[in-house]
Length: 383
Image (cartoon, rainbow, N blue to C red; front, side):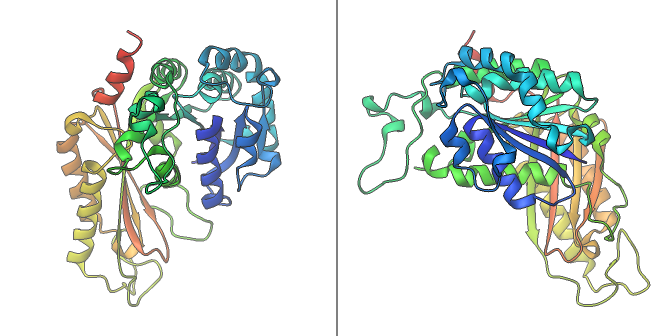
């Protein structure tokens, strides 16, 4: 599907920049922009040139908003139409979906995201999704009191988490606002992805890579370069829309990969899903094992946010990799297992052949899940 990505604020801009660096030119990435009030944050982006960065909100004086979500909302309401026009150079009318990427605990991006979502929904007949980065509990700690946000010494120079005392309340309010205005929200729980003794500042690049990888794995799965293998079950924008819904529900992305050996010989179209008069030499048991492994890891491994008991109302499964490894029977078995695992009445699915690929991968998307403990904690800050 053709996806237009808009990074809002510092965190959103960095992930949009990471997507552009890794996937500019890929069929699924129809457009990328970064919008912020902070001149320095925009200037630090590498892959997005000046034509794809835009500073808004002169009232902010070129700096951030210091966590003032109300100021961010005022700027968002005032500049939503302006931001919509700033996207025109990349023909947003051709997009099949929009993805707002935003740090929920901030002010500039979190403040502007709901108004921009409403503006895009008004202008275009395409769903607007949001990838929202949840703040870590450490961000609200006062570093002067010796809490985790201030941890570190000359022996441990890793950057600490930024001190943002309003981050959790901002996140709860923004999550509610985006749920009211977006077709679906994909939260990304930063705290769950931190390693022991790792700070948010020190882990930033790695977490941005994880988030960008999952966006590309889901939204890029249905697009194949011209002249390459066509999926047997093509994943399109309507499949994603059916899986995640249109009522602002939370959706969760799981992703897993496993390295495989390329086929030793045979047609480039391989066997299994695509058939060939010259089948490539891939051991059937090896293909079945690889597919079973990635599906289970994508479902039960670390997701973008916790899925209580793994249950979901709707589930989408995408399996991809070298065509010779995409064993149809194994994928069908995986769908049946996933239906039992999630309790979903029906499993939507697609395949993603990758010619000359060296890994098998699976993407599992769940929507209509029970609320995770972390999101419940955030909501309790404003109750």
